[in-house]
Length: 155
Length: 138
Image 1 (tube, each protein chain N blue to C red):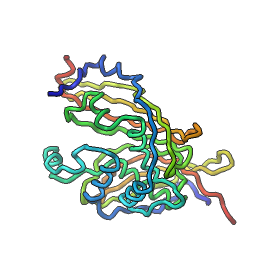
Image 2: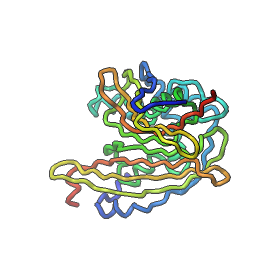
Image 3: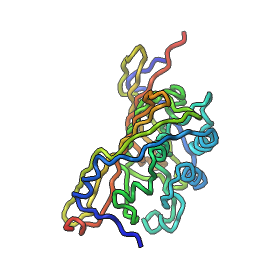
Image 4: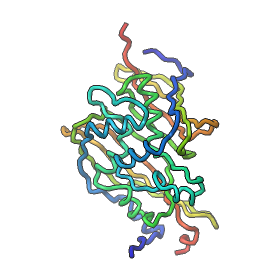
């Protein structure tokens, strides 16, 4: 049986600086077509990829997954996760059939705990996306709240 | 393209949020989170068995509005928070308003307040977008 990793404040804070493996991602036409359709529009013309691909391109392209991130920060047991914000800076348009290079990691952590209330562990994740010539295409940041039972504050 | 502070951006409407679209996006994202496809889970969470839309999809509705307004490569930055979930069956509309206009590197940048509003007026997304405006052609 899998067990959740320790979720003490110090163990969570130690995750700041964690680097994801890094990797590449290429947006295929089919996924641009299906994703654009799911958002309610036609596929953008001239090979432009929908900017909202940035979410999954960042996470999957940097060599991790939502499941792995949840496991890493101790939410793999199904404990609730909510989103604080997404912040996407787009320096060049995303395009189909370009092999992007991605790097990134965990850059900040904050624990909020009030007596008797669930603990809120907030992690900031930052991922950089470059094109094959090392030109910066996008900077993707997101902050998620990972909620813990109140009794963990005493562990 | 000339805009003025306070100008409203033409809205984008998603008439009905559907589970089929959520499933497509879950597959593309490789996102196994069950709130997008398992009604037992969303029932247990107090959402009456209605599935929760992916937040990047909610972001996409706002981006669709911006792209229809200023072109497919106009979005330079978007930052958003998600105070309420969008649920299966909801009708949502993306809105925006120009908050500031500036000139950068010879181009014009509009800073816009953006939000996504449910049929009952609840805001599911609130944020800010930085939008490069197309040059005038006249």
